[in-house]
Length: 115
Length: 114
Image (cartoon, rainbow over all chains, first blue to last red; front, side, top):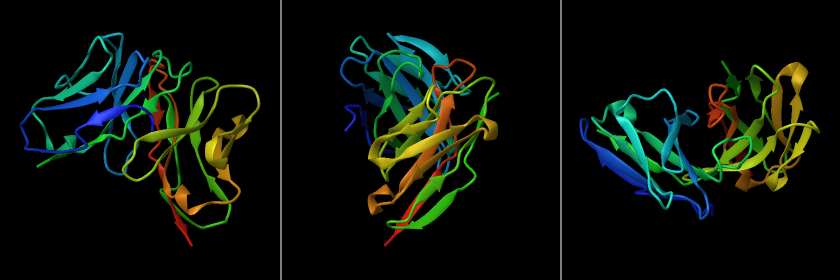
């Protein structure tokens, strides 16, 4: 039990729709990172939020966007869904933004299926 | 650019047998290295990490890993596998472009047979 919770656990959307995924970070953590894990692949970094500001972004298009709230919970929004967006979306919370200096604790993920 | 290679997509071992999962990396400097485990339907859990110093690193659940600079490897080992070790295992290192995120390998799926 990491203290990082994600909702919903499963979601089915239609191509072209928009989706919002949520992450509640571990108490005291000020950083949330989002990863996409396609079937049979390792997680790929989408972006990171540190103290409510975007603090690094991976190779994902602008239709992937996010927010971090004052309580450090976070949302991942995906617009204009494509079939290839089907994946497990993981969030990780940490105290501090640099992976060498802090441990990231992962939630159980949200399984998104786009049909 | 960095890379992480896990050559074995799937490994099957008998319960009680020893285990070694391979990880090879490419990185511009001495890397920080991590091993994570993902049990079915779960998120990732950190098993162990190497930052510097002793090249043999002990982790949770009886796992250990050895950093070998000459071979660019960071293999994960366990002397006696339990059925509960069946999971997906990922090797990772910091992304050289920013070091704010992890760069993961494609994973090795471990099956444990009685």
